[in-house]
Structure formats: structure tokens, C-alpha cells
Image (cartoon, rainbow, N blue to C red; front, side, top):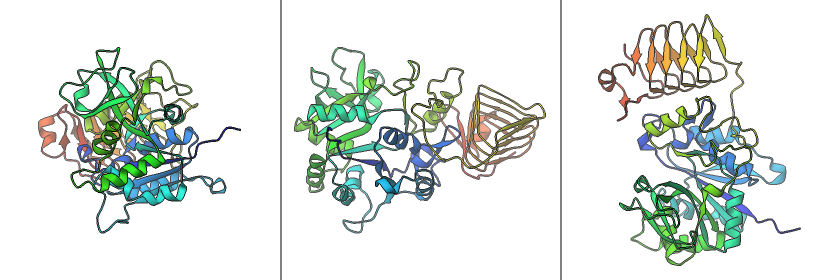
Length: 407
């Protein structure tokens, strides 16, 4: 029997998520609810767990309570087989300081790697919406002999300047440069109109990762960042390769949703990703049971439609009641009530939201437990909305958890 590589998963979940305010005012970005039944971190954890890697440490830092609670509740593993998915808070193991960067987060958590003694370490981000089989990426990493393999997604070259971009050699695999938001992104060999954008997912040979982290810690000029320092260092040494996300084949995927990946770091992208879910043939299919997105849903009754309440092109979560109201092109999470005469369109309603009689909600994101009074209008007069709420550049109105709604 061939040797099964020993793999440790590390998920970086310590970011503040400032661009997602007010959704991150009271929680870490990976804990933000998504898709009516999930949290953002469920996507990366599902990908890693579905691939058969069941030893995962989630590094947390800012406003981590709801994230810690969700992982502890939803992601219990079978202790009999030594599996675990566990949140690991910043512990100041190297002195009285918090994490100074993503690389420093792993440096301060090297005890996790020493204890597990893996052959390979997956270091994945915690706040993207996508399906991926990391085992296929690991197979390429092992076959190549690289010290690090970086997942790259093909993006139009004209748009790649907003991301970290991977320049490869003529073979299309060996990384020549790792560029942060370049003005003139390099093209993929053989595809002049595309660039490789880093997905923030890395696979390291454990020994090389440890050595590079320790060396980086001694460099006073370093920002101690994975994408900004660790990957460029390994690239300069000729030890880095790219994995083309387009080559990843997930069971149950279709041509329509294969290769889907969203960085939901802004209110606009968060809203757009939800709109991707609600079309008749969704761009991202939550209903693929061959590669399920796993989570915990409270034990609530099925959704109910009464008094002529309707919903079109929408997702309605368990425990929600649409009573004499109309919902269109929206994602309604669990335990939401939309009352008589209300109209909701192009919106995202998170758990516990209450919409009063005759209220109108357009192109809005309402966080948990927001109560909209009868007759209130949100997303109708953006100038008025800006006086009380957060309004994005594209006109998405966001109201934070439990915030008061004005008539």
C-alpha cells in the first residue's frame, strides 16, 4: 500500500474584514453568514474535509467569539480516529504581541506543526466562496517536488491589477515572480489575455515552510506576510510553482459553476455573490450533494408561505415565514419574517430579520435581528439612506446587526 502523505490544514481566519463593515462590526469576517444557511468559513472547511484531510487548525484573532462557537458547534470530528477541526486563538507564544501578519500567525503557531509532524501543510484563506478539491493540488505539489505550490485562478488580464498576480516561466508552472497589484499584469504563457491571480491557497512541504518562516522572522524589513514575503522568498529561490484552478475537477460540478471563485471582501462582492445563487441555473450551485457545503442549521421547521405570500427566484431559509408579502431575487436566511404587503427585492436578509407590514426593501443587506418597522423604505431613496446606514458605491444599503431602522 502506497504511503498516504500526512497533511495538516491551517486556515487563516484572523482578518478584521474592514471593507465588509457593518457586517464585521461584531464578528470576524470568516464568521459572516452567507447563502442563507452557512458562514463564509464553511466553504474552505468543506473543501478541505471533503478531500479527506481532517486535521485542521483555524487561526483566529479579531472578534472571534461567534467564529469559535460556530466551529465548535458545527465542525466536531471523530476523536476516535484522531481527527479535529479546532479554532486556535492568538496566544502570544513569542512574547506580548498579536499577529503582525499572516506569516507571523503561522510562526507563532509552529507548535501545531511540530506536534502533528506532517509531511505537507495546507495554508488556506477563510473567506472565499468556491468549491475545490485540495487533494488534486497536493498531488501536483508532490509530483513537482516544489517547496510551495500556489493556487492560481485565471482572470482577464485587464482586471488582474487589483490582485496579487503570479508570473510564470515558459512552462506555465514555475513561478518567476509574485507581484502585488501590478499596473501591467503579466499574461499566462499561451493565453495573452489572461493572468494568474493568487487565490490565497498554498501547499507547503513542511520542512521548507518552517525554515522560511524562521528566516523571515529574523528579517526586520519584512511585513511577515504570506503573499508579500514568504511566497516571493521561495520564488526567488526557484522553489515555487502554480496550480491552475481550471484543472481542478470537483465531483458533481457543471460547466456553468466549474471554476467559480469569489473573494467576498466588499459589500458589493458579498451582494453579487448572493445574486449568483438565486437564478434558475445558478452560477454557483449550492445543491451539489457530491461535494456538499457543510454547516450547522438550527432545528427549525420548514419555511412557510401564508396569506398569499410568494417568492420568485429566491432562497428561503428554514423557519422563515412569508406572510402576504412578496420576495424576489433575494436570499432569505433562517427565522426571518416578512409581513403583509411588504416587498423585498435583490436583497440579503440574515437570520432573525423582521420586515414590517408594507415595508419596501431593495438592494439591501440586513444583518441579524434587524427589525424594519411597518411602512419603512430601504434602498428606495439612497440619499436618505446615507444619513443613517452604510451605502456602497454601487448603491447597496447595509444595516448592521440589531441596528435601528428609521421611518
